[in-house]
Structure formats: C-alpha cells, structure tokens
Image (cartoon, rainbow, N blue to C red; front, top):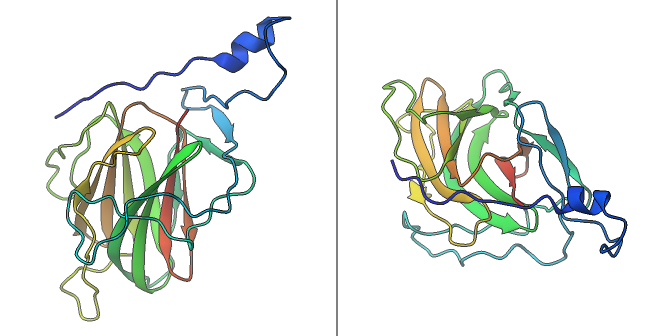
Length: 224
C-alpha cells in the first residue's frame, strides 16, 4: 500500500493569541484539533465562480479528475465538521444506481461527490478506518495516503437488476489539485450498498450530506 507524504500545518491562530505584538488582528486560517471528539467550524471563502476542475471528457478514464458543476453549491457560511463517524438511513425501498464519481477542491475543503439515479433517498455510514477493506470479501483495498475515510452508501441496486443504470465514472483517480485527498477509489456493490474509499495525507474533520435534484451524496474534507 502506497503511503505518500503527511500534510503538516502550523498553529498560527494559537501563536497569535499568545503574543501581544506581531499580529495584524486579521482572522487566522481555521485549524482543526485532531481528536475524535473535536468539532471544527470551517469558514471557506464564498465565491461566485464555479469550482475549478479538469474539464469533463466524453469518456471518463480512471486517471481523470471529474469536475464539479454549478449544481454543487459552495456554502456561503461556515459549516461544522469533526472526526466522528457520520451516518444516515436510506429511505424505505430506495433503489438507486451510482452513475459517476466527481471531485473538486475549494478554499478550506476537498469535495467528493457520488451521483445517483433512481427512486428514494440514499443513506450512508462514513468513518475513518485503519485499513480499507472491501465489503463482502474483506480483501484489502490499495489506497494512497496515511489516513483512510471509508463511506458505505446505502439504498443501492445491483448493476444487473432491472432498471439499474450503468456506472460510467472512474474506478480510481488521484486528483492533482487536492488539499489533502491523495486518491479516491470506487468499490463494488454488495447487499444494497457501495463503498467510496478516500485516501488522505492526514486525518482531518469531515462531513457527509445529501443533495437532491439530482440526487448526490457529498463528502467534504477539511484541509488547512
């Protein structure tokens, strides 16, 4: 398993709080306390521009960095994130097909988006794991990084079921523009769920939430 560099950041806010001179009084860059109970308020700078990303090609390839679109909003206000597991139940009878996997980087966080089509609302269980493994087989998943965020998306159909849509996104990609994300891997469907594996240069606060019209699960990961 590849384990590239570990991201580092300096506690500028703490240093300025201890000094009486040498600081201009401006708000420092938000920092995150790396404990399982820590809650960090992130303050990404709002922008009217759409997120920068590599343009989408007609036929996605595994090494491509799929773009976000104007339909993926950037919060105009701070949001809360932490290191604790994030979970939500799928709606009863949900039948959804994952169709693509996308990435974008913003000031203050990296974003991974799983697009789905079908009926009902998906659920999820997202948590940090010591070693990423595939559901069902338990086989280890090769993933770059020093920290591993594994998200099981629930309410998913098997690709062979009637009415299922084909997944046309990349199975694996390494975004060049990321803050902490080093690699993203799309897993296989097993018993109504599919895993999204994210390798990070360091463990950071994260959040998961649902956006609709179209249906998509968003994973935001704080970066210094």
